[in-house]
Image (cartoon, rainbow, N blue to C red):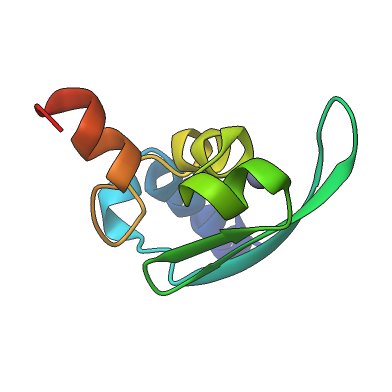
Length: 88
Ligand SMILES: [Zn+2]
């Protein structure tokens, strides 16, 4: 294998451990829930989900699961994380 490519792979492994280097600004996910498939998206700091629970609460198991997957790479602490650690 090309030696410069090997160097890039090593750098990628190191970067993958350093989540603070990355800020996720948007994404679209097809989420296979237990009962149905949902469309989850993030635009800037705004989550959306097609499930009924999200419509009422502005957060749901799907968005909260993705917040955990993307921990350390989101623009700011989520509403869920704030309410879990605060008094709200
Ligand atoms: Zn949802």
